[in-house]
Image 1 (cartoon, rainbow, N blue to C red):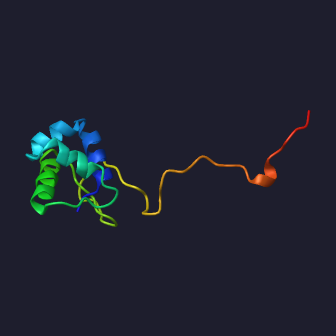
Image 2: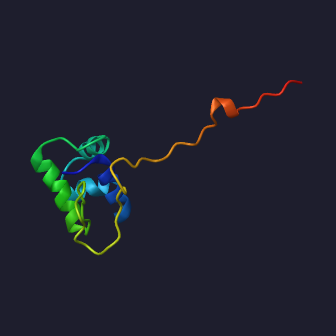
Image 3: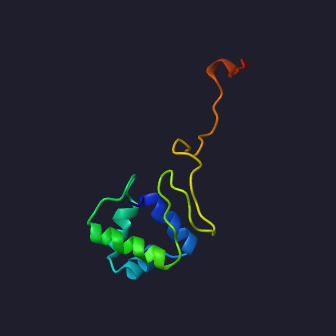
Length: 102
């Protein structure tokens, strides 16, 4: 339904903090904090999840599921593919490392 990273991205697009989202959704701040800390799909009481999704939708946010086309025409955030993750810094292979003797 919604992931922690989606919630953080949606809040960033709206320019709101967790407290503002909690107030808009009618849930507690610790609930929003717990939901956003989730790695995958947010788990919890369905009614609470629906309140948060409805608050985002009322604010103009479209939550896009995995492999789901977007129906909107505004700006959004999405990974290009499920396997896409932020790249780590490239490292030199051990054979390419040089040592110098003084």
